[in-house]
Image (cartoon, rainbow, N blue to C red; front, side, top):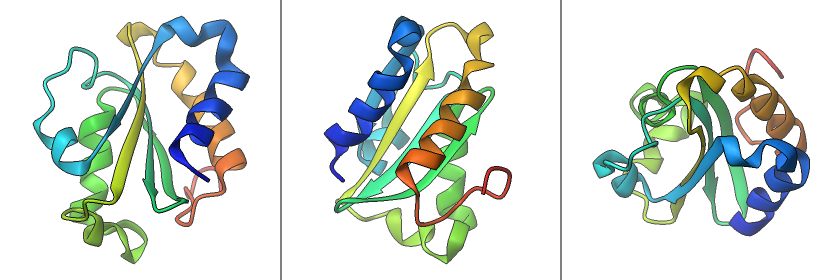
Length: 125
């Protein structure tokens, strides 16, 4: 599965509310350094590397921050190795308006089911 496949799955299911989201595809370094306007908003994150989805998760306040915590926590015993890996991409589906955070639950649950990540969420898995 490539990154375009991940984006297409999101767009196909959530096209009626697509304008509520800003999507980012970033390296880990770009995510750490980003000051993009919506990168700190509530949203869903997807860790992708070399054709595989490794983790899908959500944050009700700051998806960039929460996603990067998985690196230091070594979620699933694999995430720490992603910190300096130039092949890893972090895909963020972030709410433009923070009060739309409730949509993140639906997006996360749907993407978890459709993308079948290597490291499953305990709450949906």
